[in-house]
Image 1 (cartoon, rainbow, N blue to C red):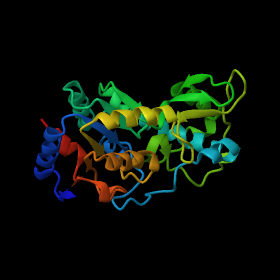
Image 2: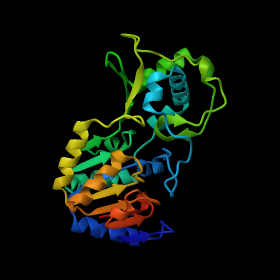
Image 3: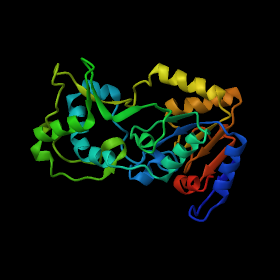
Length: 281
């Protein structure tokens, strides 16, 4: 594995040169993105550069579905966290990948993110591996609602929670603690009174099989896999590196710090994502 480490991202050109060479040599890339590409848009990531959790682990699928207490905590914190995520804008890294797609370099982008920023940047061929946070589903009758609509319902039913403030956390969450979440009224589906859940794959849930199969089919035809902003600690993303390695497909990672796939990489670029991609031609 060739490794490029840039301790001063604003002045380091080695990272961009290495990535440019990888793209020139492998012009048709499947790209896999993680939370690190959206931090420059103001959306926090989950892990530090050692791939350790920065805060408590996100909500678990089983807990959300089985526990009203968990849903109360989730939706109460979302009153603060969702507007911050909703109002985030694509940064130049998202825009550069959309430009590369138009130039024919990216036949498929797979994202672990649920923020929709790649679409806002103009990217077309995307698999939202973990869903989209701007949609809400009823787990009973499968009715679909916009996240803004559900957010409005929750605000209307919880006047006493409107004044709370907290630091934004990943994926529309917020670090709101030490309050009585049992007082929070959780809205239910207006059609069947079923449980409302963001259209995302929570931890402990499974990525839809058809999305995985489509991604692997495209990967098999690509010149290389480029990972951007992911520690790959979650298997849903790591599986693509594992399979690429088995198929003899080169893998490059542009991300800050450790990844689960470090031993599988052809090229590791430990540098600022935004500053590096801005220099790609």
